[in-house]
Each structure stands twice: as C-alpha cells, then as structure tokens.
Length: 76
Image (tube, rainbow, N blue to C red):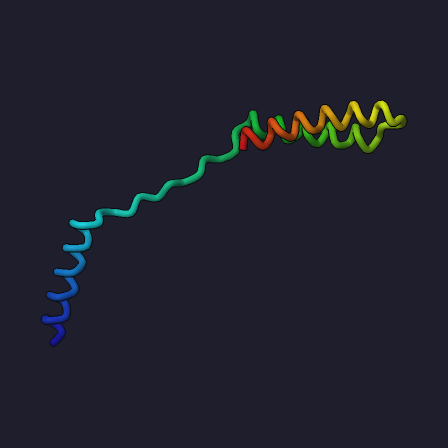
C-alpha cells in the first residue's frame, strides 16, 4: 500500500513539475537611499508647514510639500 502511494505521489509530482515548472518568486527591491532622502525632505517640508507664521508662508510650504510628496510616491 505504501509503495503504491509513493509511486502515485511521485508520478503526480513529476508530471506537475514538468507541466507547470518551478514557481518563481519576485522579491520587491529595498527602498533606495535616494528615496530615503526624499522621505526626509518630505518630513522637513511638513514641519515647515506646521511652523509657518503667515498664510502666505503656509500656502507656499504646502505647494512645496505637495510636489515633494508626489516625487516620493513616484520613487517608491
């Protein structure tokens, strides 16, 4: 019984391996140093928004933050 099962199991496994092949894993690359620099720049722009004193400074800082945020999202 055991030898029959091993024979069937081996036949199915070899057929599946021949037909389907090995599964290839695609690993996502790590975040680059450039991306980390952009993230730090984004944090600095966010603090500039929070520490701005006038509305004009705040709108300018928000525009800069929005642009940096888009760059960060593109690089990730």
